[in-house]
Image (cartoon, rainbow, N blue to C red; front, top):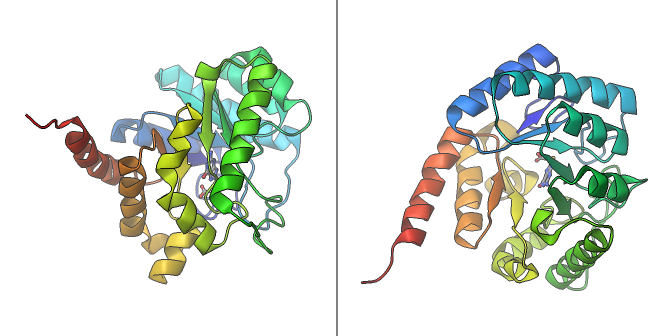
Length: 259
Ligand code: 7PJ
């Protein structure tokens, strides 16, 4: 996953020039990543919107540069139809929408572009979401929301086979909410579409371990293994080779059949 924003919480804005981001992308590809997620708008708690031109400048040249050297699937993490359009023209093959395509014209534009979409659940907005997250039944509510967004997306012309869902760990959720969602992850498989999760380096790991973001590798690997065992299809991570080894062990187990 590559974040090109100067205030990305987990990468600390180390990739805020196209050249640096491109170097990071090549490293991730060499490490064996399956999909590169490129984002130009920070969604960390308390973050503000960036404008269209700035977001486009941060992402489109990078996507073009990666496309110049690799066929790797690239996801564009954006909520702006203008960025979606240009990113897909530049070679992005998937739209990652933390707003589940609820903003502006994004549903229509995504349908028109015809690429797979990831619909994520969030309560509130990135600016306010961690102020007072509240649910009566977090698992049921997140599932209902995703079910509705799948329906809306299909009605807008997005094929079911092009839809991925994501419970949105850390997006308007307390530690308890995140743990309940993770524990119930297998239920999300009943939605009938692939499941993506992003837990890597997140605050829930930091809170449990009482560790800053640069010391969350083992906790992140543990959450990736838990998610994979519970049926996650796509895992959004920062530490690619380490997580790939861990997931290879899960896959070996899943492929083993009783004789
Ligand atoms: C997620 C994301 C996630 C999806 C971020 C971070 C915060 N997109 N973008 N799912 N998280 N689909 O990288 O920890 O969990 S930004």
